[in-house]
Length: 439
Image (spheres, rainbow, N blue to C red):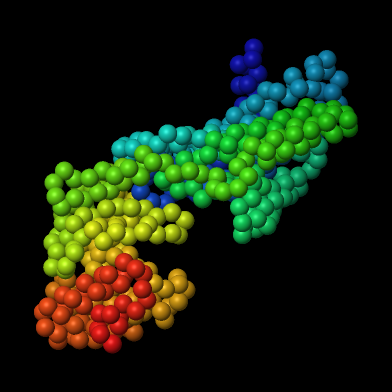
């Protein structure tokens, strides 16, 4: 009997089509040909980020369904039945919430399938954001049902979608400059999460309470038949809001590092080349170019003896060590390593095996001499000149001048200048060009 009720609701409502449309939209928002699908957490987080747009759509879908009885002119007929309100509306509410949540999960099936084939590391808790997203979408659908029944106008669905989007934007802008637990009330916000993160358990618990409360309010509004019951329907959201804010971390990040993801996987033979466990499939691609780069760097005194991937977080840099070249890998959608230079070897040799630092990100004039000095040191190590138009015009000329002045020196002095540049770059000094050219 119950099964027939659900099948009937599937035929009578547009919930199934709403779910299919949501799945297609979610998959479209997640698709990125440049993102490697071998990282489970990165794939799930990219999918979760689309909730800021999917949530208002789910609200609108629920509101459109919520006006069905009024549009069919059977409100009074249903009100006269002996069945309690919650029992009468439960099948439709379940179908709408289930189809929308299923559509959200279905939008990630392709990404999860790719991750299953490509990844060697499956992080614990990767399913947390997925389940939270499905719950939030179901809650949006139920809230839309309740509002649509309360305000059965054709304009309710689009206006509710705009209201939901506006609320998300207002919360994001209003608390963007500093961390506040209220940000976590948004459907997509999970703090500064990345592929090396684990979501804090308090965040998961708080969001579970919050979206369950919203779902409870939506269902109660949909089942309510009197003004008093509609007022009482707001209680779950009020209680859920207080409980969620109490559960959320009061200060600090909402995520914590995943030590297993950042653990190093290294070659057995020297010189050692290491990547994070997350990027273990890319190790074979960088071993040979990394060792060629280390061989060229061995001309310098106190040369580095290993290449190690050490990912940075939230715009910060890992402190560099003199015995290592620190590498930050970016992997293209097809699984190949993006070097940032013409080759992985050239990328490692940039700045004589150091990271680019020493000027503010927006300081173009300050970066030009730094970039020129770093490029000149790399070209000197490779024993080649800059190709025509390899750099933008001001830097191109500075690189040519620096190489000419460097190569005019005795061989021992050339080595000393490049070694001095490496030492200055490790300390993030801005005067690399002067150090290299002796200006």
